[in-house]
Amino acid sequence: MAKKFTASNEQLRPDARYNSKLVSKFINCLMWDGKKSVAQRVFYDSMEIIGKKVSDAEPLDVFEKAINNVKPMLEVRSKRVGGASYQVPMQVSPRRQQSLAFRWILQTVRGKSGRPVCEILANELVDAYNEQGGAMTMRENVHRMAKANKAFAHFAW
Image (cartoon, rainbow, N blue to C red; front, side):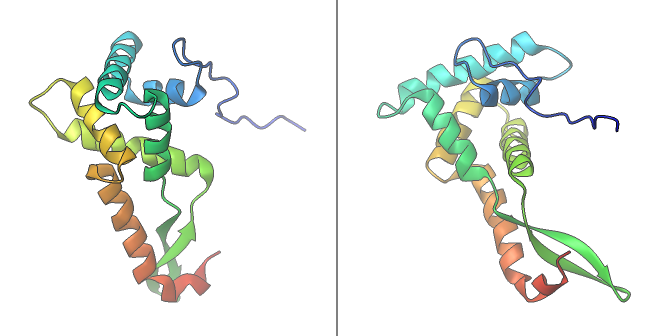
């Protein structure tokens, strides 16, 4: 039987500064046009800003808690039943939770302008750490949709 290819964190190396695979994955998602050194500089500068803003916690802890706060537990998926499409609430797998959290944080960061990206990223991570900000709003909207459609939960597959 052929080995199934999975693009998981097994091939991913931890980053140099924090020795964390989560940080390495986030830097890869932050990267634009293959410019990893730029993404690393932006991330590490934002971690320094977080260190100055949040004095009671380590920047890596703030980052990890921010990601965990943004991760959605439920989402809605379209399911077609008898000619009608229903928005069915489903649990989200841990891998998809992480990718959605990264995507929402970076989408919020890229949507803002006027200041250096490292400052915007630091502010968004601190906001997510405090359960506020644009990424948390996206998470709350997804949860609200899932809660509103829980009558269709019996269509889950």
